[in-house]
Length: 101
Image 1 (cartoon, rainbow, N blue to C red):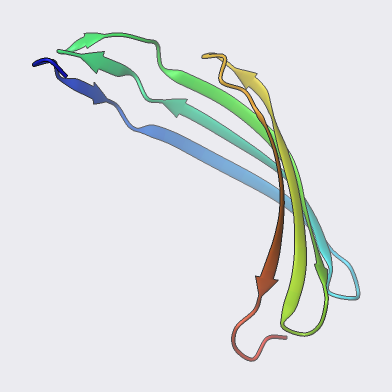
Image 2 (image 1 turned 45 degrees about the horizontal axis):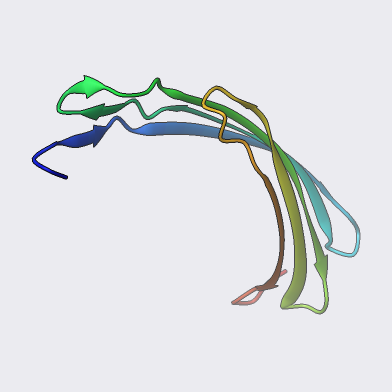
């Protein structure tokens, strides 16, 4: 980088989840995540402020059989001090190893 030095402080986060289990072992959750930190520096001089973001989302897992589930998830940026908010949608296949429940 042309003799320049780039560094960044750590980004810290905390999450909370509220989960409801259905009788057929399906479940749904509501989630919140908070991020803070990440001050960046070039040659020891600050180049941007620290990050601060809130995200909220939900996840649902529906069983296909004893070992397999389909999981749907979505989240959105509720607040971003650095204007890097985005929406996220996902679908995944979940496999449970071991004896299970």
